[in-house]
Amino acid sequence: MKRNVSSIIRHEGICHGVRFSINKHEISDLEIHQKGTFDEIRDVLKGSDFGVSMDTSTGYMVHLNFPFTGKKKIGLVINNELEDVLPFGVEGVEVDFQEIGRGDVLSVAVPKDALDGFKGNQDINIITLNALAVLYALKWFNILSMPDYVFFNIDGNTASVMVFQKNKLKYLRQFFYSPESDSLNQAIEELLSHKEFDVATYCLIGSDKDVQIQKERIEKKFNIRLDTPSLKTYLKHDDCPEWLWAGIGAALLSANPKHEINLLRSRRRVFSSLNKKSIFLVGGGIAALSMVIMSIFYLNYYMKERVYKYLTSEQVRLYRSVFPNAAPVNDVGKFFEDRVKSIDQQLHGAGINVAMAPLQVLAGISSSLDNQIDVKLNEFVCDEKEFAISGTTISFAVVEKIQSNLENVKDIKSVEIQSVDIDDGKQVRFKIRGKL
Image (tube, rainbow, N blue to C red; front, side):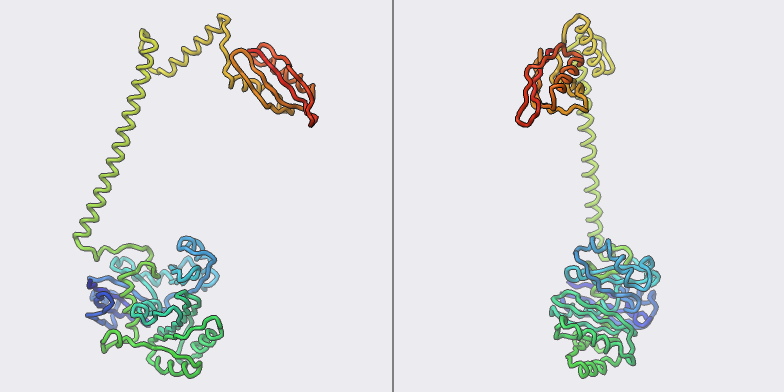
């Protein structure tokens, strides 16, 4: 399926544009638009997926390592880690990161004011840095298909070095560069001093016109083979300026920005590429889902109302079955409660003993025992006429005190000690019986 993609590249402060078509893994219909303002290039490239790549010097790339993995966990602490590395506070920067290996994180921080010029541009899918766009293009063309390699990038006055082992980021350095300085040599010397970075593939992509001279000098000085692939080989296009690597990479990223470094303030799905039929289907699906949810709420309300009406009518039916000749009442529950209390009082007034429930007896026994008494109840038996408890305590005097306290419990008529003895542990065992 053929798809049009495009990008705007800021290289050394100047905007350029590129647009082309991708079909499977082939690029065609390449258009290159050089030198213009952002708005001018944007107007030329309207109607396709859109990516933006900025000078690498605009932001800071930092390699961080965490003892845990997962985007959510890393996102909670990454700002604190960057505070110790960046030359300024994280409040004024936009941060995004990508986990490349277990706990190995590539993070990018760009000042927020550098992104102000992209406000309100809903056609932008992704914002990245030139070095990252170049790296993505190299992988897309399968130039860096091996798991172990070193990637050098020179973008204006900024150089970057990245080391990958088993497709995991293991080393990253970003520094000032000029052809007259020795900074690139120092970075390579430092890299080669790490014996664990035993890789054979070195790739250099640079915007400097003297890249071939740098390649020969580095190979001779450090005895390494340095690949400097040319886009002309892969695009079959005569006009391939030095910034085009980043332009191609940013355009490719705009077609698939998921899981990549993206400096947009809010991740959003751009609907500009959806046709009217797709939008209609999405809208219809949302409307159908809304109808289902409303139906569920209505059914829930209807069922609750039916249950409430049934319970209300059941109370009235029960009231009529027990008191067929009584007048209607507003609160059936309170009416039953009052009648039960009235019957209980009539029974007590007539001298009729209403049997206590076992739990009532046990509650009375528990409340009669002083908190200071060291006693353990092992058994409790109760029927309508009497109860019995057995347990252990520390002395005979305590047993007598328990008996005395039980005699003061309401509805307990008499209490007697049935047995008392001493066990092997010098504890006093007792059994007390009482009548209700």
